[in-house]
Image 1 (cartoon, one colour):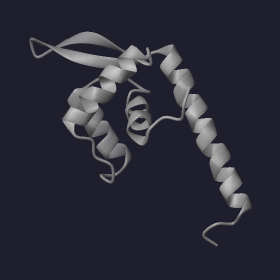
Image 2 (image 1 turned 60 degrees about the horizontal axis):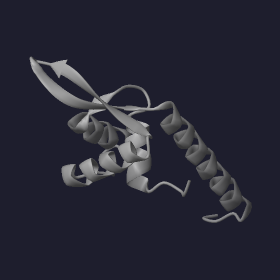
Image 3 (image 1 turned 90 degrees about the vertical axis):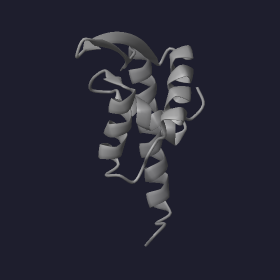
Length: 103
């Protein structure tokens, strides 16, 4: 699989601990990044559709406040891809440190 885009990585990361609905994903990303990364709803739903097609996430309906909300959860395959991408980031950071960039 190709490297994940930043937005895709953040969505998968937001879903790592628990299933969330769209607003919950947006809020989780905002909280994780301490407000430095924001995702617009239109962008989010395009990413969610693509992630479902790739079987990285799946939609589950969850009833809250007498309404059904589209809630998304990470699949086992999605967790594998997220872990692999994390390892790739670590490797890139180690290579960068060898060059002492920023020192």
